[in-house]
Length: 353
Image 1 (tube, one colour):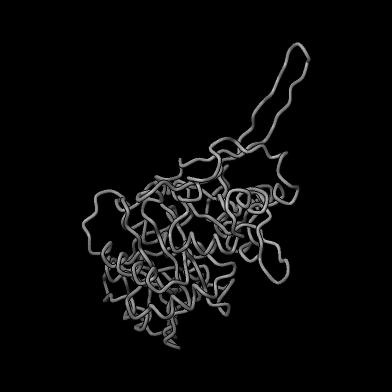
Image 2 (image 1 turned 60 degrees about the horizontal axis):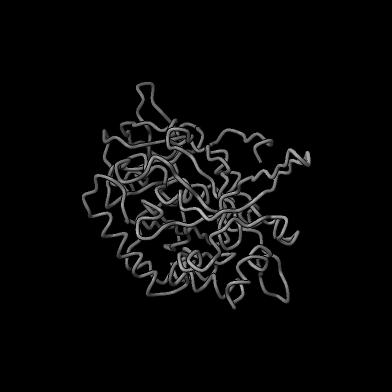
């Protein structure tokens, strides 16, 4: 049985392992014990705080396999992406160069430094044990955060953002970013892996402070760099598809390191928010539950938040049938309301990709 819950101090070693095994390495999940310990502490403090509007809170969750007792995944929420310092991206734009005298009109694609996504809530720092990737466990970890936001909307922005690692190439057994080599490399005497690790321990803001404030003209970049703009890492294609099916849309923004894509959505557009509902619990033995599509089910406890996979099996009066084990993990008794949403997502129009 799988459960998503807030991270605790006892999860530190598991978070270190997950951070070290993330492929590619994630800037927002550094394999650095002090930073991870600080994240857990901040998350616990955020859960205890009285919040009226989003600020610099962070909420760190883990996915635990109760059958094995292992923590096999982690994912986080930043209530406001740029609460402590501006959240920088490159925004894709088009400049028009025209001359009536020469009868010339030419459109040029550019990238401009932007921090307009700073007010959005950021879904970030997701890493999952390879054994569970592209399974219901993967979906549960990624989307349980939306169940948390749905219950506590005052803690988060109405606009949500999720950034995906960009496209990397393998050269001499090292992962390199064609975009970084064409842009950032000229302003920092470090390769992509070194600067990515440095930003994980510190932040990305120091990169934006050194990068040129003027628009970057795409024709001046290498063909490899241009091809990488807005392209997700192949290992994250499944996650990208799922977030698009959830209701997120590709934006004009890309990461300032590797040009990975940034998806945006307003809460009310997302499948989880539109389809979730409250149901009183009815506890029944496992063998007596009817067949039904899988669902995410979450309790109403802020500090002891729990989200599990269960069947979306409803009685004629709208009660959600749970097994005794599921009810125990959620910490609910019969009659208590839980938030539930069917797991299946609508198909994605290939034209959107």
